[in-house]
Image (tube, rainbow, N blue to C red; front, side, top):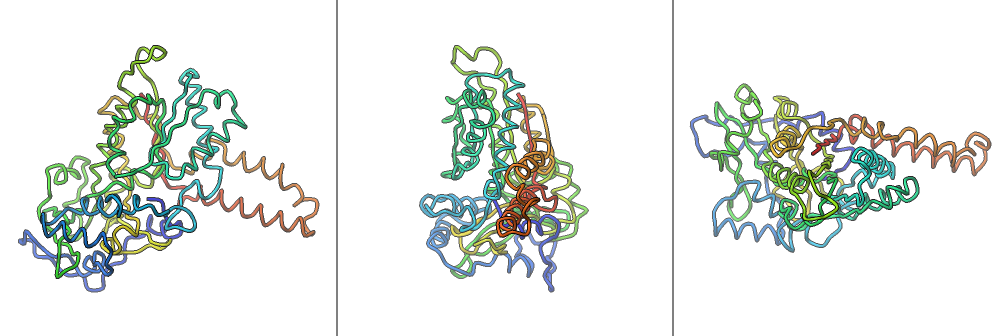
Length: 418
């Protein structure tokens, strides 16, 4: 999910470190253990209550896919990372998001919503639903901006938030249908859905399963758990058979379910006398990831799975279940294709850097410089001038972090329209 910025920047461009002694895995073995690197990567080195619960479930029901493990690690009621009552977001937690960096992000989102409102004919009410809203910082920022800068939009705007509670609630759109949203927003939501992990050996793809090994969590490879997993990469024409043995990738089937259910929120007719006829609206999803051919590249040999604990990148997803974030990059081709299957049309796909610039981050920064920091030009050598200069540098650096092409600026912004 959201991230430690410095570590995430590295993860975009560099593969996971290779093991100095990668083991060769026989092609003829159907069930096989992982390489030296993978054993280290997936080793469970600490014990938590949730880990004991997972072990008990495996002992009772047998092995589980990594997606099932990840679902428990993040969403098991009372124990999962996102549902255990602890706060993980922000500078004191394990990760932070764009809204933690600066208000610019919310202000640009406000301008984006204003543009959509205008294109849709200024409907009233203009209902926005933000999924995976967390603490609600983006909602507050957008509404505050609208009240100050776009009062007509503010009067029409009805902004609803929904956070992830059980991992499945974000996929169950029925309870949100009565809201009849016009725009649905998600910011770093899809990367938090559980993923299956596959690994290539010979001409075959194997799926990674979580098992019990001598009283602790371990892994093994076996045939894919479903045709959907087995055929996923082929459906995007990924030439994985030509990749090196040990090449690994994540498969997010829940992303397809989420897009299908979210599209229904825009396309299903509602019993409302003021909204007769065909419904129109947008889905706007921001996350880190790529389209399929860039995401599933031979150069991402170890995939994109990452864990974050106290703002540190850690390489052991089976360690500390319930206490660390687990995340993987998003396949935007999957969201686009699934959206089209449900009657949506691609309206925009760009980077967060270009999106922020298109919606006025540079102009806002210039206005703030002229309005609040003129003392830098007139009294730079004074104590007040030096204090203002430091404040200005801080604000400018925050804007730069949001647009850094090697970091947050390379997040993708997808807009689908109905």
